[in-house]
Image (cartoon, rainbow over all chains, first blue to last red; front, side):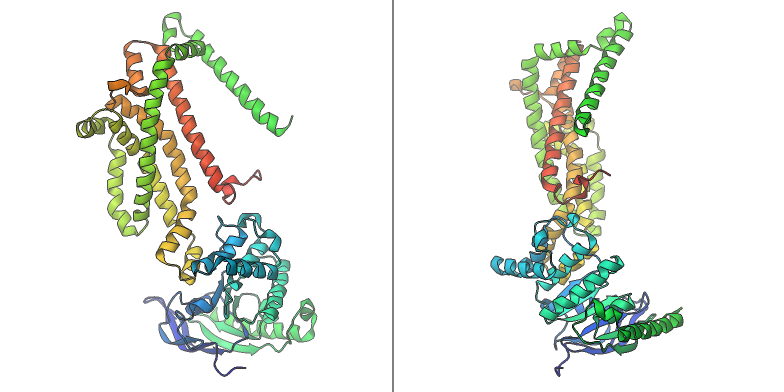
Length: 256
Length: 263
C-alpha cells in the first residue's frame, strides 16, 4: 500500500448550522485501491460523510484531505452514484453518460470513446440510444455507474446505489461492480444498509453509530479478490457477515 | 372491431348525436323563438354567404392572436428566468403579475386605446395580457421544481450557473412550459377576439372576428353570429393542435405523459 492515503479524515466534525452534531470526531484513512463500506443505523451521518468528500458541504472542524488536497480541489477526481439513478430523462443513455464530460469541455471523439468503453463495462452497449424511461431500475443504475466511471475517477462515492433494487438484481450488480473494478483502479466509498453487500464488496467495513455519527468499529474483510457468486457460499464469508451483523446490532440497540 | 376503428367510430357517433341534439333543440323551441337557435344548416349557409368578410376577419384576428401569443411566450420565458432566481424575487414581483391578470380587459381596453390607439396594436397587447399569466406561472414553477438530486449532481460536476440553467433547469421545465402553452393557446384567439371587440378598429379592413360579431349582432344576423362563433372555435382548435403537436415532438421520447403503454 502506498504511503500517502487517498482519503484522510482527521478529527472531522460536522453539524449543519446550529443543529445537532452529525459527525463527531471522525478519523479514518483510506489507501488507494481500497473498497470501503460505511454501514450503520439511519441518521449516523454516513451519507453526510460522502457529501463532505464530494465537497457538497464543508467540514465544521478538523481536516479532510483527498490526495493531499481539499475536496474542492479534488472534485475532478471524484465519481458519485446516488441512491437513485439521477439520469436526465430528456437525454439518451449515450448523452447522459457524456453529459458530465461535456460540462468539462472534453472533446467529442474522446467522449464517445469513453462512452463506448463504459457502456461495454456495464453491458449496455445495445441501449445507447434508449431513453431512461425505457430502462429497468437495474439498467438505469448501471447507466448511472457508467456515467460516473466515464470521468475516470480516482475515487468513486456510492450512496446506497442498489438500495431500491430487488435482491437478485442487487447481487448481480455487486458482482458486476467488482468485475469492473478488476479492470479499473478506483477506490470506493460505499454506503449501504445491507451487511451482506458490504462484506461481499469491501476490503474494509466501518460500522457507524448514530446521534452523533461516530465510527463504532472497523473490520478488515479478508476475502481474496476477485470475488464471485461462489464467494457468497464460503464459510469465511458467512462468518464475516455474522460478525458484522452482530456489531451492527449492538450499535443499533445502543442507539435505540 | 379493432381499437383503432373504435376510436373513429365512437367519436363519429357522438358527433352525430351532437348535431341531432342541436336540431332537436331548434325544433323543440316555439316557432317565434327558433331564430335564437339557428339550425346547423342555417349556420353553414351563413358561413358560406359571409365567407369573404369572415375570412378577412379571421386573418386579422389570427394575426393579432399570433403576435400576442409570441410576445407572451418570449416575455413570459424571460420573466420566468428572472422569477426562478429566488423566492425573494418571486415574493416581490408576483403581486404585480397578479395585477396584470386580475385587471379585466374591459377596463384595460379604453386605456390601451388611448395609449396605442384602436386596432391591431391594442389587440396584440390584450392577447398578450391574457396569455402571459398562465405561461409565466407554469414556466416559473417548472424552473424551480428541478429534482434536488439532479441539482446536486450538477454541483458535483462543478457546472456553472448558466450550464445548470440551460442544461438542467430549462429542459426540466419544458413539460410545465407546454402545460402553460396549451392553456395560452386556448386563450390567444379568445384574447384577440375580445381585444377586437373592445379595442378593435375596422379602418382599412382591419376588423377581426370580434368586430364582425358586433356587426352581426347589431344587424340581428343570428346565423352569421353563430358562424362567427364556429370560426373562432376552429381557430382555437388550430392553435391548440399546433401546440399539442409541438409538445409531442419535444416530449414524446422522454416524458411520461406520452408513454404509449395504456394505464
